Length: 550
Image (cartoon, rainbow, N blue to C red; front, side):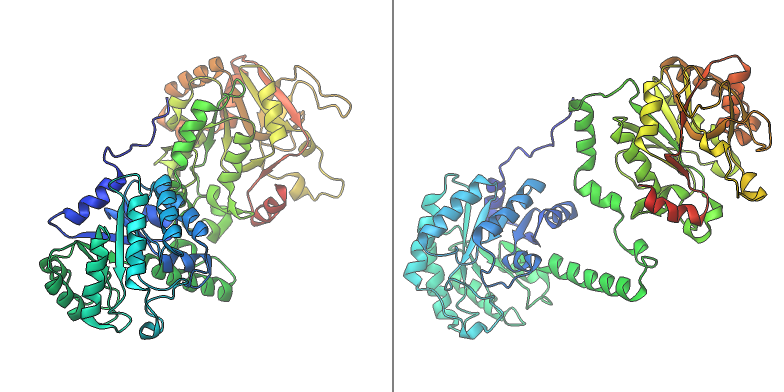
């Protein structure tokens, strides 16, 4: 059974309102989409500020209500869905008059947002730090009516409405700021946000001193950021908002990355500095989806598990495998291993196990479980398979981490009954007429089968007779593709066999060695013939060919 995501027992609105009444100082971190909201929560922040500036910037428009309130609402809904902490939305002026404000409150409550902050400026607004002293303020009584309408529109008693006073920013002075704050308090605001553009905290500290404890105060120390936080704590402010720093830090990083990639025309030097894709998938909740797929999607065919042996480095690829295994070399924009896992999934093989070894931390694909062969440098392929011995429990397919294959090859394998079934490429047994001796004699896993592949028909009941390493050996009928399917009984037999092998045997034994032994013991190994549809990535040329393989 899939476990639902854990939900806090206290409502988001209740938790935000509790911050306003708490004796300690609380902090809200800016976020501008679901991803940044999740990052803020994971960092430990107890609440999130849905910044109007940052959301506008992320949408590529100015902070002048160029993004409609419904567009902002859509963004903040994603933020609320992605997190379990309360969100206080920067609601600008309420996007219009009192009627707009009360509709906004209704829609925010529906989407799980804990509160809204509205500022006493004229709609459409201008960012407070742009031409600040030239910005006209809303009529105080009109804005007080907007606050009252917002409070009366809420259905959740704990929903928070914060009135933002812009008098100091606009140059109207302390008396006007206090006058407006008091009017909004009487209108029912849950808190007042007092803003300042000064590079020191003198104005807000004076406001707090004269304001006293009439209503909780919220501040945004973007300009006076050098002030020690203890000053705010000792003065008795309730919430500090870090207003735009996730957006601004992301902007700096993206500018640097874009410039470096454009200049260098390569990802070398960048890939190691950015978050791995696995971290992106984790934040997106990919693991929960994987578990849900197992619970709710059809189980597919009789084979539900794929085991990928990807412990080797792949020295033949040189610098491409300096700090990552061959399985993680990019092919057409994503790691070779991801192509393999995608092929499995396309055939409804969903329980995927990857055996890692060299640079195992670099194997960061999603949708698979991992076992490690830490002795990869001194052991063979069967040692890696032995590491996944627990997965040899029921029907499964074993493949290599450096062999691409198309779905139709996999489908043929899955549809053929037998304890052991291998896919053999018959084209490989027929070198081109102009092939050089070196090409004709290349290293490969050659198969000698009971019947050659017929160009007219696909023969039934073809059996593997031997696995050969010498390409000049008589009787070769094709090349093994690296795919082996086992029934439940076959997997059990291999699991028991692996338990009997000595350390010396595991140090050198390969999967072809396993197939040879099965044949010698008289076990029936069935063959599915294919013509192409797979690619063994052994050289830089293979890496290039892989881009067109898919």
